[in-house]
Image 1 (cartoon, rainbow, N blue to C red):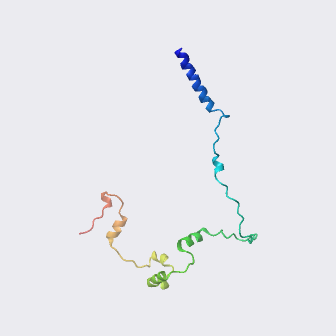
Image 2: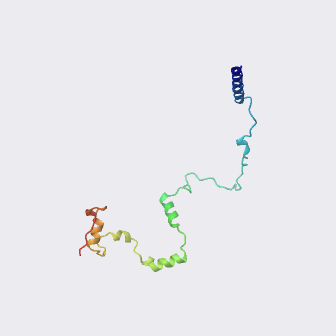
Image 3: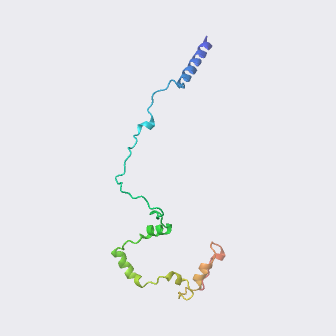
Amino acid sequence: MRKLILVATGVALVASLSACGKKGYDRARPDEFAVARQAPLVIPPDFSLRPPQPGAARPQDTNPSDQALEALFGGTAARSPAETATLDQAGAASADAGVRSNAGSPSTTVVDKGTTTQDILKSPQGDNKDASVKTPQ
């Protein structure tokens, strides 16, 4: 008798669990896609747009290097009075435009820092004996 009650209880539990999975028995849930409102369509306020001319250059097609220069240096914007004064004090009006190419030329005069600086620059990296520089006493 005890086995019969356990089997009957087990069958009742299995039947009740299987009833939850039937497609006919489903609670009414809100549709998560129907909750949000759809934005209304908006007509553009300006109808006087001109159609593009065939063969004309597109305004958004610009050289990437020009875009980078404009982003970095601000394009052709007017300089502030403080920036203009700083450039005038530094001698921007009399500066040589090709100074960077002249800096590495053999005719450029440089200050001799001595052999110790050259030895430091030429020495290998690390902490071994070859990487150390002995200065004359």
